[in-house]
Length: 65
Image (cartoon, rainbow, N blue to C red; front, side, top):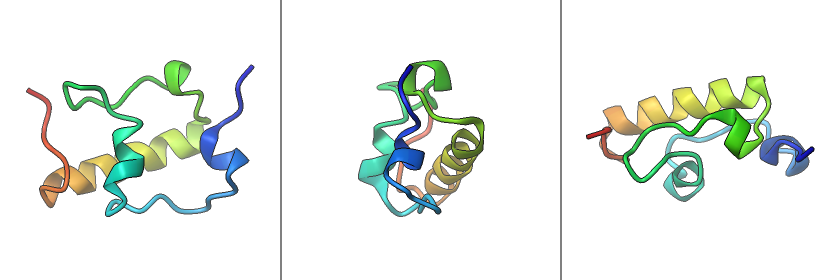
């Protein structure tokens, strides 16, 4: 079983301004990828989803089409 990326890198916060990191967790359509495919734990998946939503609101990321 793969380990959560954020737990293994010992990252405490996920910054919505770090677009390169967030792009790893969104599909080509702009949707947040399922944690079964990205192997993120529930805590960090919620943080990823919140960061993606904030980045979309501020137009750092595009919305799903």
